[in-house]
Length: 80
Image 1 (cartoon, rainbow, N blue to C red):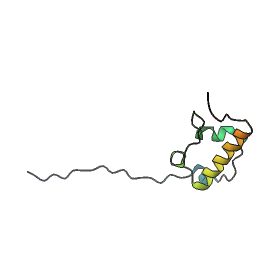
Image 2 (image 1 turned 45 degrees about the horizontal axis):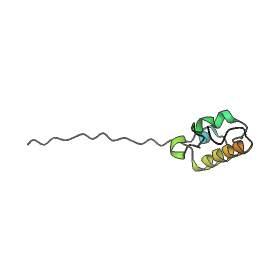
Image 3 (image 1 turned 90 degrees about the vertical axis):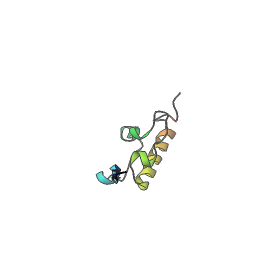
Image 4 (image 1 turned 135 degrees about the vertical axis):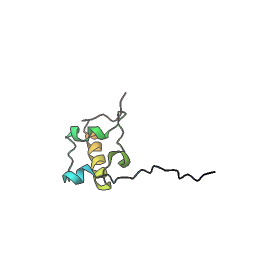
């Protein structure tokens, strides 16, 4: 048998940059629903870091803003 080199395609993981760090946003207001609405799933769950691409600091800020908005009834806790 002839030796064949099999080419294996490897994915080079590109490091994701946090959107908040790139735009230098340090504060996310809970009243600004349009900013964080895209990070909430259709069932009302907060998207995890691996999906949002946020750093840990900004993921905590996002989660806190969502919780405050839920508490103030700006966004629903769940969908029916």
